[in-house]
Length: 306
Image (tube, rainbow, N blue to C red; front, side, top):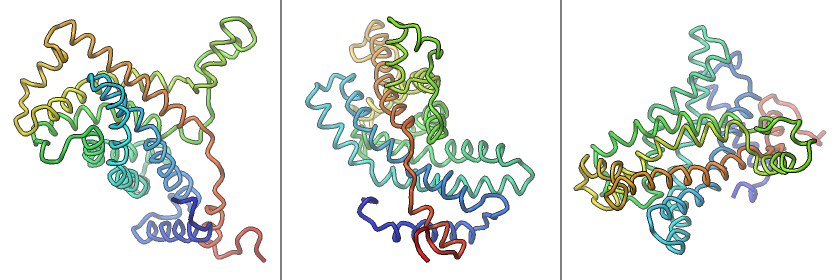
């Protein structure tokens, strides 16, 4: 949709957003116009777009590991991704606005810019934004609002915060950064299997962040899977007993099934994080509209204009 808008329109919108930030008290001495545009507006737009692109893989695998069948899982991956669009926009829009405001506030209280940015991201992502993320995931998996219970959400949100810390925060911070292969550069020159593995990791953008995301999110994801599954199957009648049965007995009520289900959760995270990590590792194109927005804010002609 953004590609259909003229660059001037996008530039005007971004410049207006920066002016709104200033009106809300974000000082230019703390965060420059360039930082607001690059580190917050652009970063969150790209991060939200990456999550949307990766969402079909998550919802497909989620339904597949819960024995929905290939065709059903494929259809639900599309419907789930479409269903989350407004909530995803609200989620990353909130991050784009709340994180710079919190950063500026922390800098006013004496924190360095590095400390303030890190702490602001953590505070925002692990507070009210977690509720939005919970709605995104539950709705994407097919849980209707009338199936959600307060008790289930009270269990869901803490587990989600744990997964957010290991997932979203890691992937969001790497956007636009330089990719570093998880394997040592010497493997590239060794030939044979080592060279092939190095090339594979290079192609798939496998770095240390990939493994941090997979390992750090799998345990929390398993709990989230359990809550989502019992909400889908029991709705308002969901009890902690149902979640306990899922975690200790899987889908078939046996210890072997529980172990198998956790292994499926790990495979889900491997698949989804592979797609998400690859998207987050791609170079971000330069936005001409951002240059024009800076010119508007600074009162000088746009590039190419007299």
